[in-house]
Image (cartoon, rainbow, N blue to C red; front, side, top):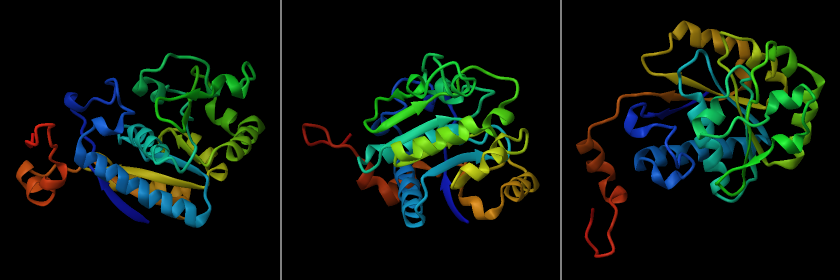
Length: 248
């Protein structure tokens, strides 16, 4: 498994719920470069292995998987090379819709219950080439619904409609949902949050999925280096030039 360090800022200054989360150029430049690095590594592996369905998950809650899934899907679509679908398969929480500030319209659970068609749950985003399916209303037995033929058939149909499907799943250990869909998913990316995830629980999550299913691990939440450190190595690349030719 490959590991990519992706330090995601969790403070109020960089709240994922602020308008413009999908405007990739508005985020921290260093974080943006890390996202592009993650996208390049994932895209290369997916293309090389001919994979189409990628799940983003974690051992436990609070590791940053939803934010990573959103940014990865948006970054993939922004290159213009792929038509991408971001799907929230956490039928207990509407995490993707909440982070993006979307209205609680019909979503995956409503489709699985047979109350709406596929066309009713597909939503466009502000990023060209990126579509979204929210989780829909909360239901009592998500694992059973995700194991059903309706979900399996939906994924098969979406494989033919999109170049890449990015699935934001519930954490692996608290509920069985991620493991339930593992046979329908080509690969997983796991989040491991620095100073948050117990190593034994992370190991257990890997064992539950099976290492062959894991494309890589994203190390999240490492403490940010000092500004002087970044300025020394990256400063010239991250400075913005004003219209008057002065650096700001």
